[in-house]
Length: 100
Image: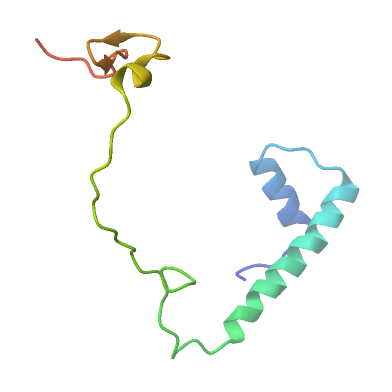
């Protein structure tokens, strides 16, 4: 890490986060943060030169299925709980203004 994790760093982080910490909390969090950073720094010791980059921890393959035509829901059943409808459609407030 570029700098040492100490109480001054924790105070600076708390100030940036706009939280108030007691002296006891500052001491506790500086010790905990130093341990966390120490664990993360151990990763720098691992030789990863022969490890391929991953986009996912498991090998993911797209599962495709055939399109199968099925019976649709009844339009009246679909629209029965809609707050507002227009014909066979849900009516919703516009979100984009048109230049007319």
